[in-house]
Image 1: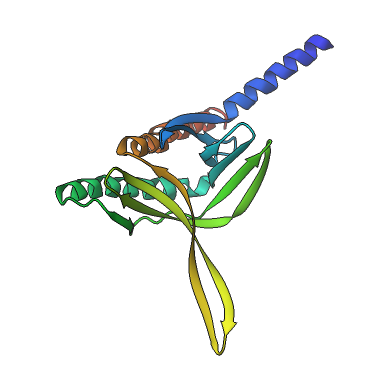
Image 2: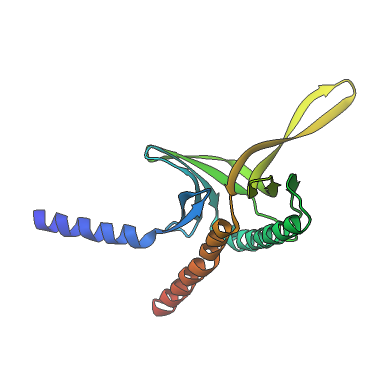
Length: 198
């Protein structure tokens, strides 16, 4: 009976490892991960500690839109760096206007293996050029309704915290590589398995 339990535990371990795929990338000189869950949702780590971690959750049906938007933002980031260098721009903060908009995402706070989900947010890509840094960063926007003042109903737009940022093109390129090359491999493998086991 004990041997049976050990074998059963090993089978469960193999299933769990094969179901979740993790890819490392650099972000702000720190190691981060893209995690593809067994339901094919995608988690992008923002902060990762032993007891506390924060992720962006992109649901599987929104991943294609997310990939298109990130690629466009990254291309514009590289283009703007060249323009800034050619025109001696060293102080600029500007939001990007993209053809491919980012889908709404959720923020996941993981605390001692318990997950807490926020409401959905929209990501807004922006750039920040300073003398020593050329950064691509993403913020989340949330619109809140203010109190009614006299006969006017005032709506104010409030920008929330920066979610994640890239210090260089090499960092953003590495995430783009994972979003396309690695996710394409997973998609091909899933199609192959579906063809085998109809």
